[in-house]
Length: 114
Image 1 (cartoon, rainbow, N blue to C red):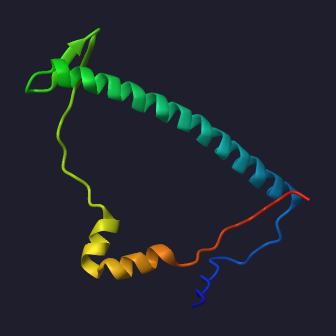
Image 2 (cartoon, one colour; image 1 turned 90 degrees about the vertical axis):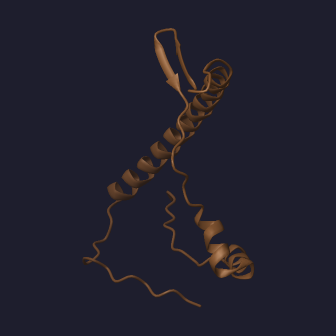
């Protein structure tokens, strides 16, 4: 089943070499920052696990600690809906599996320097 194309919001103009080069540079920068952010995220998760273990051990029933000039606590917040699970519950396992195996097509921009 082919997807209908979205109507253009404005008339397209021919991109310049500068436009393509700026796009590729912006993409390169985003990917580099994403890798860097991934390293920070892994470090943050490791440190959070360490602090959480300490709170669970020393925080008592309130799950609060004061340590080294910081107050840390674990609080309970409302859960978030897992839409994949809810979709499967509403539409059934077969429909959910069909969509997992055959997700709808989407458009992706590909640009390479020649």
